[in-house]
Length: 132
Image 1 (tube, rainbow, N blue to C red):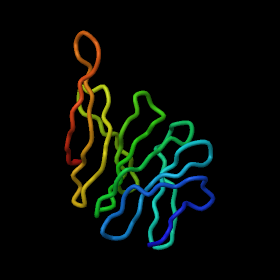
Image 2: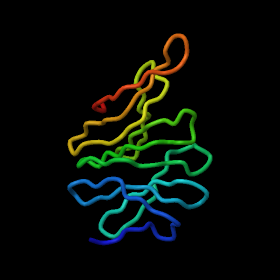
Image 3: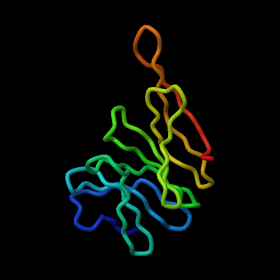
């Protein structure tokens, strides 16, 4: 077992690892939450773009190096995937909020979704999805 802390961070949390040994997680620094990727001794920050400040939490990575995470700068928070240098928002149609919980080794995404209901309030349930 080895301890992993993002260099210079006040706090780091590893939240996922794939079969290739790539670790993802989040660290607190620069005024907010930042996502990180660690592989073979190399660290990289991965933040959802255009949020005006660090507000990214990474929650999972597949064996194909697809990363899923949450952007907490939006209200409600939004979910995304990152693959091959591109971010894509994950949003269940007609939902109020879509929050990813993880991604399997082969790329199946899971999470929770909330819908506005007539008369006020929300109704939520789990979901699974495959990125296309």
